[in-house]
Amino acid sequence: NDDESTVYYSTEGTLEITMLDMENGLVKGTFEGTLSDVFGEADDIEMTNGVFDNIQIVTDNPENTASAIINGEDFNANLYPVVVINNQYQINLKNADTGQTITLYLPEEITTGSAIVGNGQSLENYSARYSFTNGQGDEVTYYTQGSGEIVIDSFSNDIVSGTFSFDVVNSVGNTISIMEGEFTIDVSF
Image (cartoon, rainbow, N blue to C red; front, top):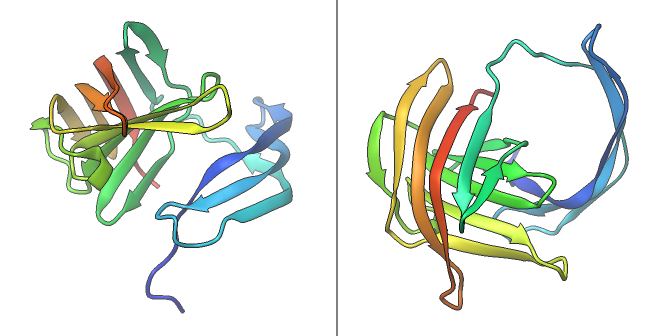
């Protein structure tokens, strides 16, 4: 029995829906891909021949939404994975079509109000990062550096909503502006 658990995230792979029955609320399909340790300490895990069959779809939860303007271009998320690591929510606002992800870091004890964003590279509470896949298939990551803000408008029944606006910087000093961000996310597990 391990005292510490390793947390993995998907770095590449495919998910194929082979049956979607909205009338009965069921889905089935296949998946494969690579999982990487969030802290880069453990070996990658290769998943092959993954199958899910007759999984119940629950649609009575509030709909997750997130949008922003990234360097003047509209961004709309369509995937919303949430994890809790080291007493901190990592809320991923991902557009699966473009490969762009805005990750918001919030303390597990979320309170309403405004917070100045901290250093996203050190994963401070109320910080963020922005990542995308470049033309060579590499993930490029930008981090907040202590400017901008995340505003929590409400947190009730595991639904958090708010706004954000900040700049992110990469390792060579290039800056990307993320403005007019809005989100409503179910953080329950």
